[in-house]
Image 1 (tube, rainbow, N blue to C red):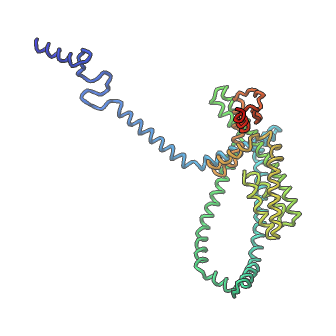
Image 2 (cartoon, one colour; image 1 turned 180 degrees about the vertical axis):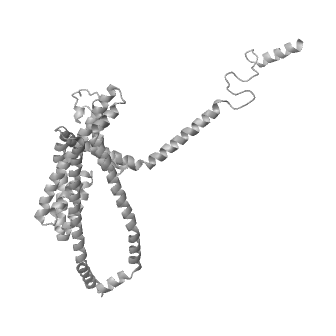
Image 3 (tube, rainbow, N blue to C red; image 1 turned 60 degrees about the horizontal axis):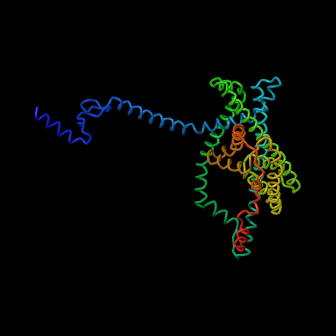
Length: 404
């Protein structure tokens, strides 16, 4: 018994609290006896690998379907834009499918007619430029020979261009690029068909789509969804119709100018300026004005200057007089917010984001406005930007400095 007592006494002295330290595994340790792997570890590893695989698969699928998702987003906003017209015809006894078809048919006829007129105008201008190119080249050669005392001839220049390696390489690259352009054209037509098909179903089956969406939500959430949908229809349709009205006014104003200057194809150019200036935000006016300026320059360089001056003046009139009155009840957002939303939409979705940014932000602003509690602002001069006389202005500080 003595050795046992000595062992216990030594163990008690080794422990700072006078207790014997545990010799087995700590309590709560899930390790299996004999150092084997815990039971939960294989399942955790399998679950982690499964989550990683699902994430990778989802990321791959999202990147593969990005183009389709963007097309569906465009189709949804297009369906929201034509929803008021379709609902108006449906409320008068017409079937929604037929009403949607009539709206699409009218828009297709208008777009096809505009593209046909614009294409014929551009083709005529290109033919005119090609036919007048030899005379223009002769005038340039005569000017060079007169001022630099050279002996250039148009025939020699043409022969050197025809037999040059640069022209041969350009023709080869152009022949290769024809296939790429054809593929891009076919891809663009397929995208347009996809957008038209989805937007048709979204507009024609709008009530069924809303009913299916609300069927999986409680009644309180159903009211919120329907309210958000109604706001989106009002803002998107209002944005489209206000832009259409401004495009009409802009087209009429530019038609009067171009017709008075005698610029050819004035109606087509006016429609071009009206549509491009209104449906391409921020820089659309200047892009739209470039084509009539170019056509006017072929008639008289001073006409191009007059067109530029008119475009700049009309842009200011539209920004500060016309647009605030037309959009105050439809898309009532601050110009700085509109500009920032266009920049953000362009950074996220490119040209598509620039087109849908303003109605999307207007919808979000109108929807969130009902949940933001507002208070009466105190009648303080600082609200209006006026500072009190005793404030720390530079003159007040100088006055206090000299009065000490």
